[in-house]
Image 1 (cartoon, helix red, strand yellow):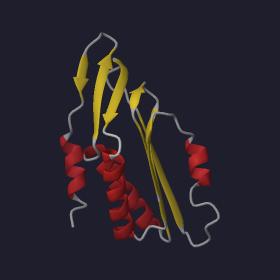
Image 2 (cartoon, helix red, strand yellow; image 1 turned 90 degrees about the vertical axis):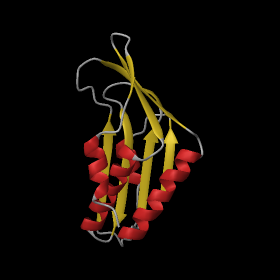
Image 3 (cartoon, helix red, strand yellow; image 1 turned 90 degrees about the horizontal axis):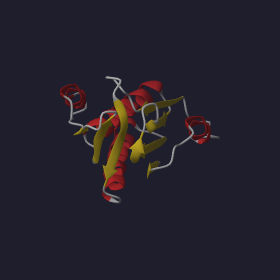
Length: 149
């Protein structure tokens, strides 16, 4: 199990290749990589802030919960911070389990948590000099409700 919060770009192919390597007890490995999106065509960059130590601890706790709920054999979460441009990778989740349903559900759970609850603050800077903090979206909050125990 690994949680990394970093400014550096990551190579998703290399990360996935090394993830759960050499394990013969796995039936599924699922991964997702999120990318900075420019829906309106005006985004210059997004800056992501976090509190070092607190962020890693919060993500590790949710990884522990996912591991418990879906009996994961392994899990990797990478999330970047700092300035990011449209098209840059922002995060990656990988899960490994004996069964595909568990790996898929755990990955979705982690992605929903990272989108709505992980302690990151995102500020968008447009090509026109405008800035705006990114608010939580209703559909992201709704996605979390399906995981309530």
